[in-house]
Length: 367
Image 1 (cartoon, rainbow, N blue to C red):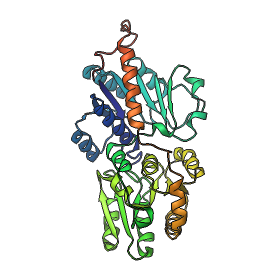
Image 2: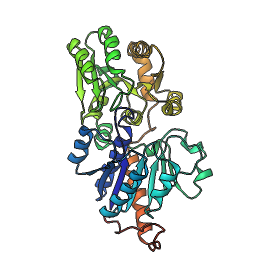
Image 3: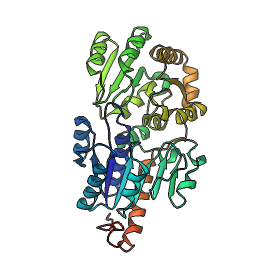
Image 4: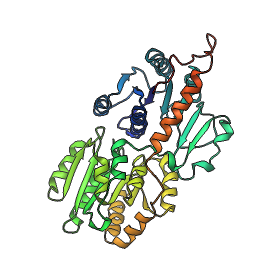
């Protein structure tokens, strides 16, 4: 089977869309298939990571969500002989999505809103805790809905870290800080400045930043200033390892949320975009994390205060970690990949549409 993933990343939108697509792409590979990416915006570090994983990357020379982008995406799907398309991003209009559906290929769309509007996809994924209560059927009566934490897509190295034995929470002396692939609010450096000088003896700060982070120079400078207690990790392929050795994480409330939940690390979740707020509130209601709004004035001070308060209360952190049992089992990406395989198999059994009505799959799924 061959699956085309259409997602973008950059300083303003972060890397979350591409990273959760990567999790599913790895699962497609594990099932014996091929994965390729198409992107109109993609930092070179992320392109190198995808290429290193054996995934071809097609650059689209057009504005994301434009008519030229749609034409290029359709052309790539045809030329590559893909059996299904995965779409992840907020910048694709209703008409754009309908145009992609016109290929006749099964489409799986990640969605974080659940407004009830038509998504033009055969499969819809939303891993938020209350996703099943959202009105997806209103605009998508025939779609297969993959909803809730059971479909949280975790990258392979995170799945492996979640399954491995971990030291007890009280023995972990690392505090992890990560604000996603680009840290669009520029929180990393100010949070380091407020956390590092107040860390208890013997506690270290692991700071993970992505390749699209805007203020990389400032982050590096502040990490160097506190080099006795701060370890900086740039584009690390071992995020699962860092999460597993952390007694607490300070994290953007994006795709990392499911990873932390699977590994069992309590967290301070920081919303860095409005569309993260509802899912973050649901996670907080489950009792395993504290929530801070990153878009508000004084957010770095509030983040540091909450993190240090939790660090000083190991009993509470242990209780928070206990709330995580069974929420995310780490198999979401494989479930999604199997659903794609089933959709591709059904599509391959259907006759190709007439000219002008879209295109049927060019090859049956293999593996």
